[in-house]
Amino acid sequence: MSKRHIMVAEDDETILELIRYNLEKEGYQVSCYTSGEKVLLAAGIDIPDLVLLDILLPGIDGIQVCKLLRSEERTRNIPIIMVTAKGEEQDIVEGLEIGADDYITKPFSPRVMIARVQAVLRRRQEGKESTLAEDKPVRIRDLTIDPKRHRVSVGEKKIDLTVTEFQILYFLARQPGWVFTRYQIVEAVRGSDYHVTDRAVDVVIFGLRKKLGEYSRTIETVRGIGYRFSDQSGDPDR
Image (cartoon, rainbow, N blue to C red; front, side, top):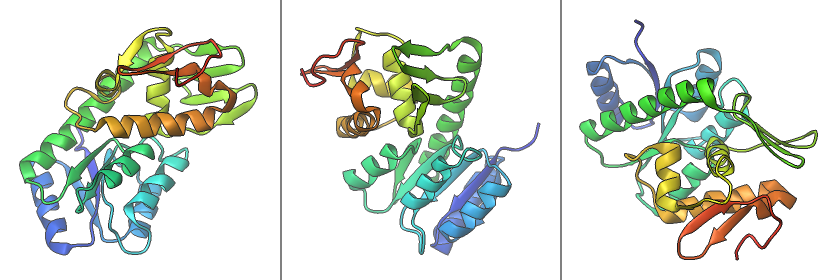
């Protein structure tokens, strides 16, 4: 069995070497880059199993790299873990909103990093297996959510969603009328070992509603609890 390939983008050479050493010790193949431009070029040529992406990169920063990877058909499904030195909620929220799979806050221990990498790779593998085996498109009038093609459309018009937005929409749409807490939503689309704030879920839902346009009302806020999907055209914040 071939080694899992991880690309690391980090401009601090000391941290980069620490990450490389610990990942290789765990049996991963590691490619290291010190700029956003370099990792974008490399990921487009040789698709990795995961990208560990520092936010504060010179030139094209980590947020922009993540956006560009998610915007291309060839690279949009690469698992991405964002690394932030600030530890501020806004950095975390922004990374998750554009489709990052997880985040690590500096300073971090090598054991925490390895655990996060393993968890993301495991969740992605489990998600692939369940999607290929069971998932079917959901259709509400002109709105179609197709998990196998990872596509959402209204009529003939395609709606571009981040990986996180798509996962949350499909999770809610599969069980219309059921109310889910923010924790349940995170657990369903990311796994119980994924740590994220309630605020991050709200931000993703806000962005999702904007993109859905007239179908934004299908995602309803249940005050004090969470969210549900409805094919009725009521008030989304009722």
